[in-house]
Structure formats: structure tokens, C-alpha cells
Length: 300
Ligand code: ATP
Image (cartoon, rainbow, N blue to C red; front, top):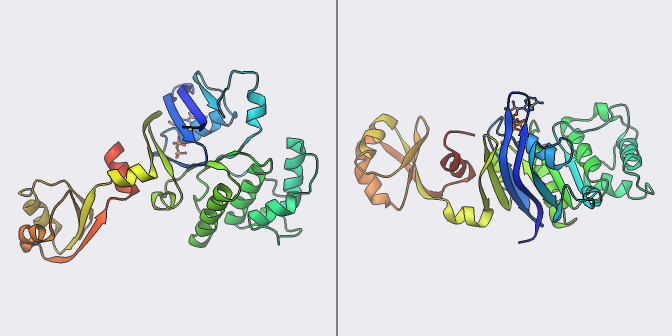
């Protein structure tokens, strides 16, 4: 497979904390790679290191097949754009002037493509309005505009939908898909909102305690996802007792809802849970959140 980014036993320690403990990551060309992990798992550190914002303490990584210690890496770094933590924007400047600043920093020869970038991120009508007065969603989109100013082949986005309202989340999702499909960018994106990540990601990397626990394509994950019956009951306690006789794995979703995993018939469930007051049964496949919990244990 053609990898845009590959990390090999990547190590990064802060004074008392080992944030990356030998990460092996493989980001396929043209993918939207969802980086999933709990708070403190090492996602931001990993993104900062491969974006060249921090130096690793061990291991290495390859960008577009070129080792970071090679002389040619400088050229490949120009093919990477990133928005990590908060968007790197100047609050006293308009969107256009922010981009002019970024173009100068990148040494781009002309400002001709600025209108196109503003329109790509949906900020074409912001005129002289200063970025400081933008909504949070607009600031995030301006941050992405800054990150894509050099027309990168790899775009790294750390929690781009964190804190956005539902409408802004949809806009961000559409933007990510457009950048990937129409502008051919491979994108690494981290998010805590797994349902949302599942709407865009074509690959996943599950990271825990500074280690890559699993990498899987969305297609394979779907195949691996366990079948489940989601059941609404009056009494979870009575259900739990009855379910011990069934032997299937199950997980309690809330006070009245549980998922029973495995190949199990509705009739069998009705028989076993007859005393628990079944209100509804729905067939479903485990989602990304369930898969995450199974792969990593505990909650995201
Ligand atoms: P979150 O989702 O909360 O941002 P994360 O997966 O991005 O988490 P990191 O921010 O990479 O995780 O942090 C990994 C570990 O390194 C954590 O234990 C964190 O406390 C620690 N860490 C991160 N940055 C620093 C720093 N500058 N100095 C010391 N420790 C740090």
C-alpha cells in the first residue's frame, strides 16, 4: 500500500511523561484517517511530531516515503498542512489578510488563489470583518484555510469539530469530505465525537497510552463489528439476571436499554427476558463507539 505517512517506533517524552511509547502508524494515500483515543492518549503529541512542530526522542517517520532524517525531507514537509490545537490566526486581521500573511510565511509567489481558498472554506463573504469577531466555527474554518494555503497533499486536523454547534459540525464534515474528494488531500483527523468521525473516516488508528493499539480500514471494521440486538426494557436489573443464563456478551446503554451481542434470535431473547418487560427490540451492528470500547476497554 502507498503510505503518505508512516511512523516507526516513534517515541516522545516530556520531563515526567512518556507521551509516545513507540508508535507505528500507517496512513494510506487518499484516506481520511481517524485518530481515536482517550484524553492524554498521545494524539496531539503524535500530530505535532509528524507535523515537525516537536522533535521526537526516538524512532522515525516517513513523509511520502521520505525518512525525516533524509536531506529531501524539507521538500516533503511543504506538502503537509496542519491545524493542531487552536487555529493559528491573527484576530486583528480579516480572513483575506490572515491568508496573505500565511502566503508570505510560506513564500507563495502570488495571492491569486486566496479567493478560491476563502470560497472552499465558506468565508468568501466576510469582507473586512476581523477574525476576532468570527463565530467559533468560522475561526475553525479560517484555521483550515491557513492550513491548506500551500495546497498540501497531507492535512492534519486535531479535533476540528470540538466545541462546534450542530450546524457548524455539518459544515466542517462537508469541508473535510470536499478537501479529500475534490482536492485530493489525505487527511488525518482526531475527534472525540466518534459518531461524527465515523461519517468521514475511511481508516482508523486507535491509540492508547502512547501506543497504536490497532489500525483498521472502515470497511474491515464494519465487517468486524459485532451484530447486536438493542433492547428496551422496563427493568435492567431483571434483564441482567435473566441474561446470565444466555451466556452472550451484553452491555448496558442506559437505565432502560441494553445491547446483546452475537448471533441470537429475537424469539430467544423474548423467551429469556419475558419477565423484564420488553418494550422494543432493534437489530443493529455495533458502531465505532462500541468497537472502540471493545478494542481499548472502558469508555472514550
Ligand atoms: P487530548 O485529547 O486530551 O488532547 P491527547 O491524546 O491529544 O489528549 P496529548 O496531548 O498528546 O494527548 O498528551 C499525551 C500525554 O503527554 C499526556 O499525559 C499529557 O499530559 C502529556 N503532555 C502533553 N503535552 C505535554 C507538555 N507540553 N509537557 C508535559 N506533558 C505533556
